[in-house]
Length: 104
Image (cartoon, rainbow, N blue to C red; front, side):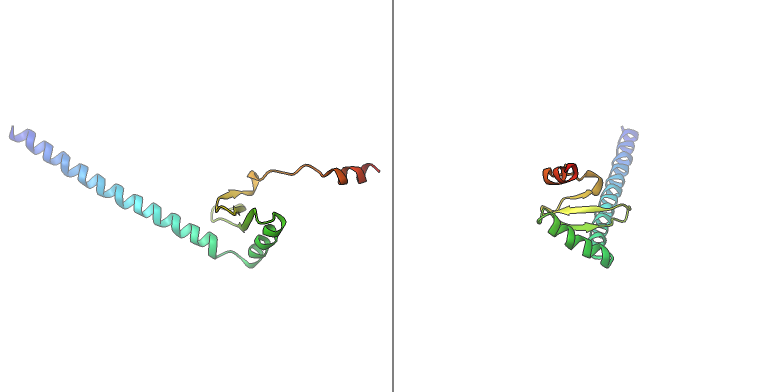
């Protein structure tokens, strides 16, 4: 019975160490995500900030910012705070006035 108890205590110790490691890793990922979000929000070049203001006006406030994420590419921020790559934006069909003037 003593050997089984020792094995159990060893397993409990390993489980506790694994749990501690998981907590540390999870906290590190959370802090890195927050740092990346802060960078995306605060460290954009002036041209990107100006583009964000223009895009906000163009979309009548539906999107409130343009960002260049650390991962690359270009993303927009909705009024609700959702960040999405520009490739996910829908394209508006040509307006009927444009179609008429092109055919006239």
